[in-house]
Image 1: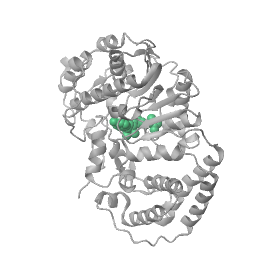
Image 2: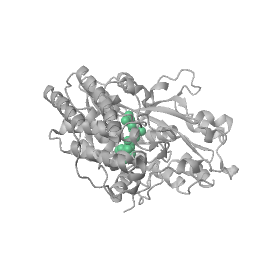
Image 3: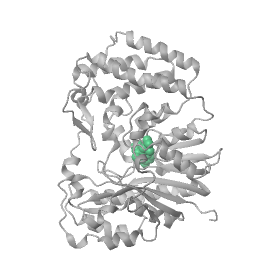
Image 4: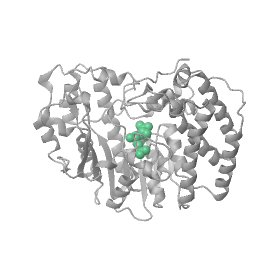
Length: 460
Ligand SMILES: C[S@@+](CC[C@H](N)C(=O)[O-])C[C@H]1O[C@@H](n2cnc3c(N)ncnc32)[C@H](O)[C@@H]1O
């Protein structure tokens, strides 16, 4: 069986996008006119409020949030600020339909608010779950005991290499065997919550001991040797696991028990209505995948396959098919086609279609992305209580020099559904070197990351 290749070729080819047809390229007036009806705050970025908070880097300073570095996550500070801004009541219910590693849910948990999340990537959902559980004194004592066993165990289990050649390439055979032996020890831990904590630390050790690292949309070979490469494979893994486990112990000792644990569904945000069972949401805070060709089953390839979250090519395909159409690694059957927005369908998509791109699937991906997001916005509208608020942290993208203003498109879709669009708060510009030379001067300010804030009216 040959699994999907995890290595990233997209990044190289994106640079080869060519702006070939100038006549269809939307000009500055088009973008200005499109966003005119909305309150765009900080378009000049002079005082962007959440600028530093839309990425995960701050999370390394927060207990529990730092147990796994989820590159695509946002910061707990951002969620805290939005919960305050939205005036969520003490017994309120918060939802994150794309909960990733659970930042929104963890913050809700810390604030004793009820919360519900949806996530199609089983590895990410696992991280979110482990971070937001309560652990008893007894479980903490057991954790100590198991850690002692872990460091003294000889791990002489018989293990077979998985039928996935890429894993041998990613870790090297000796390291892979050692990882699998330690995993065998973990699987045999009786207490499920303690087992999951240790398993998380093992998953967290994978990238540091691998020959590849996460980069762009996939994995790239590391140029430098790993930090502890002088140690034996076993000691390299245990060293990494230990540093996560130390963090976990410190954090669990310093955080008290909470009133309520989040509910996380390993389901698509497009199906969320089937699981909410008539619950009314007070606030929805999320960041969806961006329309940037990133495929989370490629980025988390190591964790998904090594952690047995996906065991076959067909499992991987299932996750891809359930995900929002933000990448080109699957071909979906037609779905949700009854969505139309003139600026998107009559201007932006024909313009993108007229360019020579690294893959001709991009226009259909974009069309599908906004169809899927429109379904999610409709679901949110139905589930929110009247007066309930929603914040969407999203980034715009660019193909062949044509900017896709995702923030304005989502705001326009939300408005058509019946939401009041409060503001589009620009957080930062996101010009990358490959995009820089293609995007003309006057348009660069539209290539940005923003928070779109919408509200369900009180009277509907
Ligand atoms: C930008 S990340 C969210 C990160 C999250 N805010 C955090 O701080 O951890 C987007 C997430 O959406 C997930 N996703 C993609 N399609 C989905 C779908 N249809 N339903 C639910 N989650 C989905 C991806 O797996 C990814 O974890």
